[in-house]
Length: 546
Image (tube, rainbow, N blue to C red; front, side):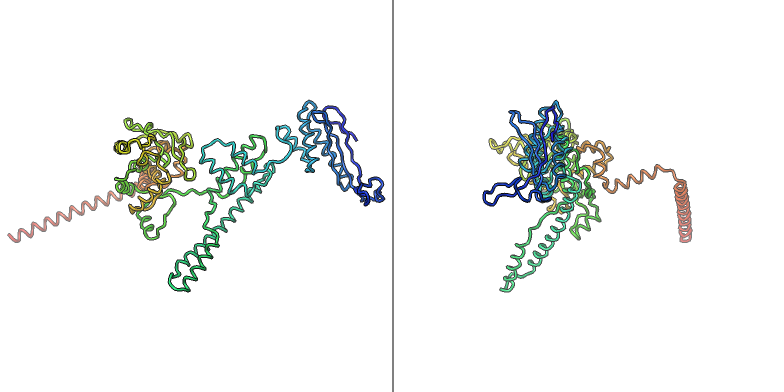
């Protein structure tokens, strides 16, 4: 049997029977002399297909044996010929690629690749041999990312902790939505196990705290309980909804790049469904909520906002703190923590009552690095009020005094807010300091980022246009501002409700107002009549005495 491949040359190909029996004395194959050769199920079938020669002219072929039937052998021979026919006649490079692939598949005894998949790879200029695993692709993708270090670290965590252990072994081109659904189901199951183990460890620790220290029996019991606690898994964090969404986003981004490189044609991460993230709404510390917090110690929401009076009380409390100007600036103008830590004097124009946000200090683990804002909207000009300008001017004078005191040891970073020696502030330490100050003040707790939320609600309470509020905060869209700050100061909602109600001319409302006016007139007349009678009675009484 001969096969006509691209290029016009005939290449031999055939199927044949083969007996693997050997002479017990010589160890040589018996071949046609085997007495059982003519038995129906004794021999196996083999195939051999000549391949296009190598570029140096040397010959090569595809050979495979062990088929149980002629039909199975012929099917694989047809498969090999179909693969040989993928390269066009005028594509010598393609012919060599297919031939090299078949030679390797034959030598390594690998399964024959799918014809259509090989056709796609050949057209896309991809490797025809081997299959890229998801783990290999993720490593390659991470190595090619050119983003800030903290972003890379977040991607690497998703890849190392979740993606590689669950789907790293899967072939990239065979990754399916079902594989990802199984991964997120496994993460949810692991969360349940972690919560149960945490509860067991917490119960054991609480029980240990109740065992007295004195007494031989108590000490023995404490020792046994400590050993049992040490044998338990440590307290662990669960993989929450926001983290699961980030895992999905990381995988989706990597697979989009794989599509761009024509490694795959379908992105299963774009179609897998997981639980949505419900972002907590900002709530104001009303008197009722403060009273409940004082009783239970529980915050109504992870995102809490101080009232103007509470913000004022905090700023009065920290008036002598070295970083008062930072707390003031964040409270009124809503800078992010990293933006405040990284704000340079060169972009702070007190004469023009403005500053320009052009950078930030960000954490990568516990390391700190300077970075640009994450989005274009992060680059912005922020207007400053007279009071804030005055606060910053006093802060600059104090910084100049610190510079003079430190002398040559002063670190000239050029930043507005620094450590005592002029070096960078660590954003994490700034957060720790803020939390200590809040606790010392006795005010209900908020996070440092909630000062930014407070600035937004103050602007909205002052009837500042939502677009200006959004621009000041550095949001890319006013919808983000609306979504976060639906719950603002109570009197703002009351004022809006009253203003809205006055716009609608209701007949019932007019009648009620007329009745109120009439009642007021009647009450007024009754009061006058009463006063007149009282005056008359007083005059009559005086006349009798006279």
